[in-house]
Length: 104
Image 1: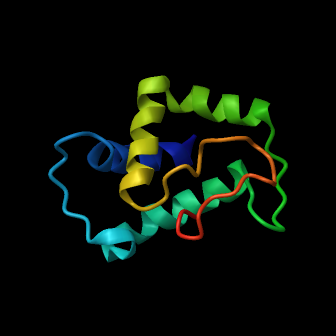
Image 2: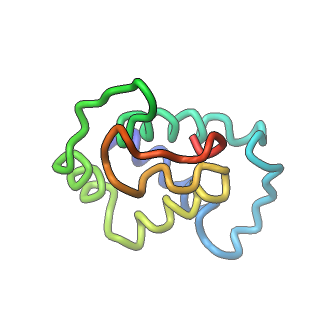
């Protein structure tokens, strides 16, 4: 819960319309902590390649539930899209889930 609450302000700045925040692409140095945090969550949520995770659908429902409602989750996903990580918390939840090489 602490992890998710540290991400919430960034999600609301970057994931809402008219945030007025300039982003210099996926390598923006101001976003490195947000990207590292979300890469870690993504690796747990839907591992890629040879990675394995104990995350289950029950874990995912719990995480989404403590983060807030569907509107909050949509803001988080929109933030991921703006920082070049679209789709990382969506899709089938298994090791065969593929994203583009630049989606992390």
